[in-house]
Image 1 (cartoon, rainbow, N blue to C red):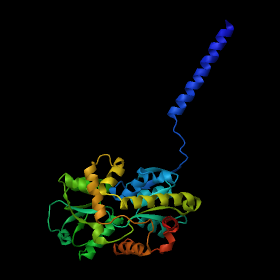
Image 2 (tube, one colour):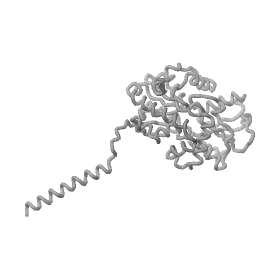
Image 3 (cartoon, rainbow, N blue to C red):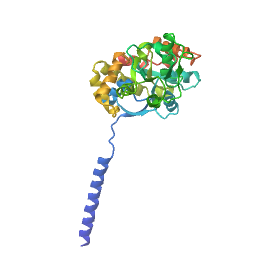
Length: 336
């Protein structure tokens, strides 16, 4: 009898162990063997389609990287996270790295891959017009984003290019946070606002405003958004930076060779509240102005133009040498 009880207990223990192993295997996340990299993006926008394609089409995974993507809502927030080691790689305008370098930080950030080469914002008007002129902005109120940010400075650059004084000829209301601009425009008294896609097309589809111009098309090429990391991180993780850049380049090539609808289908999971037709239209808007960089290389001429824009806006007193914060080492290896 005693022997029988021991056998039963042994069997029950064995069953428990087997069940426990099965449950553990079913509930535990498998080790993919990929390097998990935390990336902080400045905002969520169709403007960054090559990045989302690199994730959805498996280019990062192919190069051994698992992306943990965080949306920081603003270049300042992204840079703060990078400097505080709250993320590995930042994704925002290169101006953030220029500011940090000029602050004299020893472990400043280096830009190692460019994604977009033009301003991605569109000018939205409260009233519909068939013959828009930049002169229409005189005497009006515009919501342009945060003063000191590239969207604000690029708009100022375009205004001056068209003979408009940003300080005297119109009102630039920079009191609205980036993610609240569309709502503030729809419910407020501003005459114009600059918005990225898909928000621009969504605002128009809801009859809350009308797209009248592309700021990027008017401004020309500027290194608008790029990837950066602290010098120490790049030095200690060269393989990761190289693999990351390789994946981004594959994303850039993919969007150049596919239709707006194909791109929309690839990145739709990143924009669950936007239907496929609106997403396709938004992507087409960026294709029409040739917004995406062909390669991750950030050219010196474009970098100098960015600093010119910043200087004209009164936001930059000391320009930064190109080779101090632009590190094309990995991008150059990528395209060979």
